[in-house]
Each structure stands twice: as structure tokens, then as C-alpha cells.
Amino acid sequence: MKTRWVFAVVTVALAWAWQAAGQVESASVPGGAPPDAGVVPKVVAEPPAPAARIAFDTLNHDFGKIESGQVVRHDFIYTNTGNAVLEIREVRPGCGCTTAGTWDKRVEPGQTGKIPIGFNSGSFSGTVTKSVFVSCNDPGQSNVYLQIKASIWTPISISPSTAYFNLNSETATNETKAIRIVSNLEAPLTLSEPEFTNASFTATLKTVTPGKEFDLLVTPVLPLPTTYASTVISLKTSSDKVPVLKVQATAMMQPVVAVVPSMVMLPEVKVPGAAKPAVTVRNTGAAPLTLSNAQVKDMPGAKVEVKELQPGRVFRLTFDLPADAKLEPGQRVEATVETSHPKHALLSIPIVPAPRSVKPVAGTSVSAPIPVRPVATGQFPGPVTQ
Image 1 (cartoon, rainbow, N blue to C red):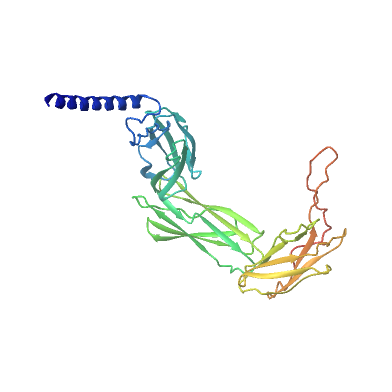
Image 2: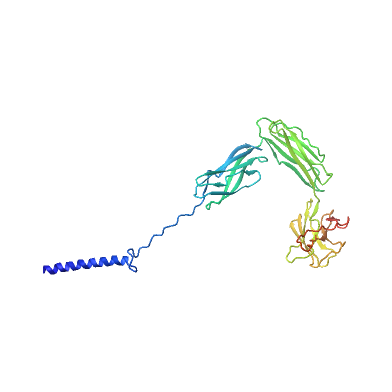
């Protein structure tokens, strides 16, 4: 009995050993079950590609209080925190008063570079802010905006800096514009009488606050000898910082009713879908203007559309000309439109041939416009008012 029990134990042990040996063999034999069957293998991520990274010490710089006309500069410092070469491709200031010096275009990883920015405060006053655009090869921020700021102090401020008069025959002769002069100096300011050389203007100085504020009163003298007049008005000051103040005065005499452009061009070939020729009528007179009875003389089938852009002030005349319309040499064709202005009751707008293109000579592809043949005096006046 004991012998049988020992035999059974030995048999079971051999069976277990045999089974274990078979599992090991199946793991090593092709086609056998893998030892980690059912376990999902881990995916190993590829390392990121090398890239440049830009990091500025600051994106903003405040120059603080500076005097008008002073030129200042600041170096923006940046570091390449990436693992590839950083390339600064472009540095573009927002206006002409701001400039970029020679900047570091290539910066190795871990190294620093600089972008020098200059600012000319001339003609500015008060708080001014300007931007500078920077482009680089940082994939995370390829476009960066830098900003500079300054509080510009002006010893003597002039507002406005010029006296401009847009005149016509109906303008009142006593139109006057005041130029305010304000001293920001601690010591009281004194000004001399205005000095200028053009008799088309008068200028007088009025004290608003003694030693601090003044008004320069400028008036044009009508009628002007020409359609344009200009002068520089000078005032000597008691300040060493600004010994002389200068103010520009300009007067322009405009027609009460103007047509722009003064004529209509008839194209040599009418292109389908091309914009129709048009002119603008502007009224700068005292009373609102109305237009009526617009037409084209001596061109059958031609039409004129009148559209009021600003009530009583600005009008658009659009011309619908026949596709086969042509002008013979010396032929006079004009559009007319009646107005409500007593001195400009009828506007005449000449219609003239458009400049022709030169036909290229064999073997060349050069073309150039041929100037319109000069017209005899009085043949095509424009615009004409009757």
C-alpha cells in the first residue's frame, strides 16, 4: 500500500515537470504562445525634433519723460532657450520715427542676442507708443511684437502747427484761425510780434495768460492774387531752448463748384464689364446745390446717371456711352448738367478720346501711350461754367 502511494506521488510530480518543460519549449519554439500573451506592449515616443525658442527679457520698454526732438535707443535682449539655431528673419518698425539697428540674426542655443531700437521724438508731444514687429524661426511664436513708450515734454507747444484756409469766392473775408501757444517752462515766456513777408495774410498776437498762454490770430487777405498763397510766421521768444517759433500759414482758393476730373475719357475699345467713366461734382458754396437735366450732346444713345453722395454737396455723374461711340478729329462732344447755383447755372464736361496704345513693331513687345493731340484754345474748355 505504501509502495503504491509513493508511486502515485512520483507520477504526479513527473507529470507536472513534463508540463512545465512543455510550456518552456512552446515559448522558445516558433509558433508557440509568447510568455506575455495578452499584454499590450508600451509605445516609446520619438524625441522631439530640434527647435529654436526665443525668450525676451521684456517685450516693453518705457523711456519715461524725454524732451521733444531727443533721439533715444533701447536694446531688446533675447535668449535662445531651444536646442537649434535661432534665426531673426525680420525686424520691422511701425513708422518712420522708429528705426531698427543691426540685430543679431543667428543665435546658438543658450546664447543671447539683441535688437537695438531707436526713436526720434521730434514733432511729438504727450504720451507716445510705438510697436516693432519681429519675425523668427521659433515654431511656437514666429511673430513677436515689441513696444516702446515715452512721455514727450515740449518746452513750448503749438496747436495746431499750421493755419490752413480752404477758400472760395463766397468765403467771408474775415475768416480767422487761432493758433494756441502754451509755454511749459518754469520761467515766464515773452514773445515778439509776428514777422512774415506775404501780404496775403495778417497775423496778430494775443496774450491769454501772461507768460504762459498766447493766441496767434491768422487771417487771409482776399482776394488772393493767385489761387495759392503761403508764408511762414516767426515769433522770437525769451527762451534759450526755443529761440524762435515758426507757424506755417497756407490759403488755397477753390472753385465754388468743381468737376473732378475735368473731362471724360472715351475708351478706344469698350471692354465688357469695365467700369463706366464717371466724374464728381463738389459744392463748397454757402448754399446746398441741386443738379438736373444731365445729358450728352451730339452722341445718340449716351446717358448720364446723377447720384447724390452728400446732400447738396457731392454728386457722382456716371456715363453710359454707346459701345460703337467714336470721335472724329476736331469733333466736339460734351456733357452738360444744370445746377441751382446762380453763378454756375450750367456745367460743361468735355468728352475726349482716351490715349491710344502704340502697336508693337514686328519683333518687339514694347508699347507706350501716345499723348492726346493738343486741342486748340477754346475748343475743349473744362469744366466750363456758364
